[in-house]
Length: 215
Image 1 (cartoon, one colour):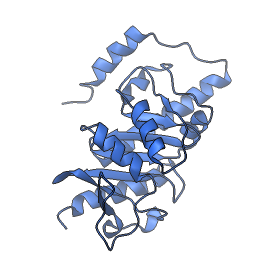
Image 2 (image 1 turned 90 degrees about the vertical axis):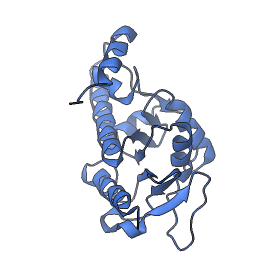
Image 3 (image 1 turned 45 degrees about the horizontal axis):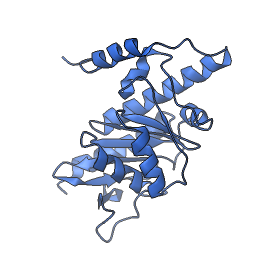
């Protein structure tokens, strides 16, 4: 397969969400935009035990939902992945998890405000929470795209979190960072709530993140 390397990347990231404690064994999903077909993507199959996942199990499909025959069924959240790829050309990989603290915050229908400068890692002064919709629906996909406007991540009300990155590993790292921020924010709420950074400071931090880590 020409796309074998990308399929292997999806497998590693899918196993990584479990290894990093970001989702139980069968929850969450991962996809990557296909290098040679930008209007198509590779996604984890629905209900798979990621410990047993192999590159051949990864499902290839178009943003319109079309998929070649003789494949496993794609993740039930394929609508959300397709909508993000369609809306955000810079998105090359997507990770969706039910990580504990991000999910807990999302169940209050709160986003993550600028309590810490690292919130800017998601691309803006806050991390929004998308409005609730039933999992696997077009409505949820639309809500996620709206909440991610100008951002690389959002929480999903009563559900979890979703992020995109430059590749599968980058997206996985961002999902872990969002979970860390959610955990820190949860702890801050236990002691009376945060002192928030102002929008001017967050704008400075967002600008600095544009070149952070580049050598």
